[in-house]
Length: 430
Ligand code: GDP
Ligand code: IMO
Ligand code: MG
Image (cartoon, rainbow, N blue to C red; front, side):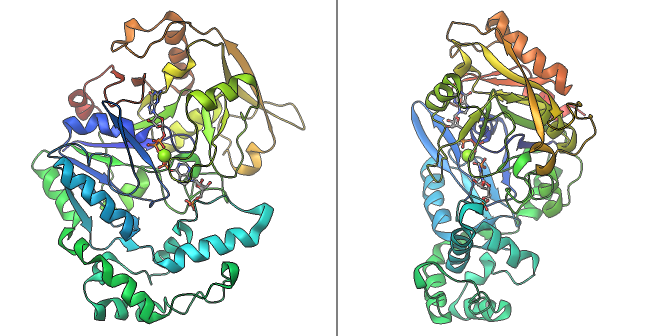
């Protein structure tokens, strides 16, 4: 019963979508287990690019069963758009009937809070993620199954007091929260979702019993995980494998593939020790088109942060790494952070230190400049074809994280990836 978990190891946008898209060709089931439409996973094939926000990154792969798990917070409008993509591609989608719904009020409250915080805003995507998870944790969430009839919509809103409870939040521009009647009318527009509802946990259990390869797709990344990330500038769900375990009751994985970009980026607010404002970082920003796939905001760029990647691998249970966007490093020396020292004492940060926001804000990253290479590598499909300097860089990542690199992204296309190990052998590992 092979279970492969794929997660981000930095601050999101590592290229999870592209890697899952590649793996989807060999998997039977792909599950998105946490987060919401704050995510944007880019899938590219033959120059055609699609950004998926809620459904698994297998929806463009014919025949794959794509599940949206009960721990996801769903924007119904986004789901409807993505179901069209799945239908056109010939993949199958099942939405867990227990997944929470993002109500219009959640987005209003998210936006109002961000505006009220002014310069201390968290930089959320304003998609209502935080408020929706608050309702879920308070056990008053509105679930996909509640969309069934006008009566069930009204009942769920009343059960959670959802139409009235958040009027205390000052909404932007004097906007009034929607009334219960308006919310019932809103919820009644999404009837076409009903035929896709089911029990995703039962399906996973059954498919595993039949020997299917199940891929669990994380959203965001280690640094944005609600428990392990850089609080308060993080999201409200578990990006790490624990998020999958929590909903699905599965605690044994054949492998946990951590995706890391060959350099660092971060969108939204929050600490980033290796942030740079240099000719190199501006070049990477431009070459990598480092803008949020969902909000269009500029992603800040910096050097590869090995201490943070090491930390994410250890605490995230990463067993294998995929390094993406290596192709973009062509033509330059490569800055890498290989250690942290405390700003006030100059002492090295010890291995087992928990890298919280407070710690990260007080470190001086130690940089090394590695030799680069000049030839394009987008065509490489075998590790041995990579220039020596690229191999040296990858070996440095492996030796500092002590995690083997099994894949290397050399372009945005689904097939622009060097796999050093087959999915079937990964399914056997551990
Ligand atoms: P995700 O949220 O982790 O799925 O990542 P995003 O899709 O938000 O951002 C990653 C971006 O990098 C997308 O534009 C991808 O098309 C692109 N990308 C992914 N892997 C590679 C790669 O190996 N090389 C290049 N040049 N681009 C890549
Ligand atoms: P994928 O899956 C990058 C960031 C936001 C903000 C913080 C909280 O594409 O990697 P939220 O709306 O979740 O309350 O915002 O988290 N954020 C992401 N950054 N990629 C993502 O997803 C993100 N999802 C949330 O920018 O800093
Ligand atoms: Mg993204």
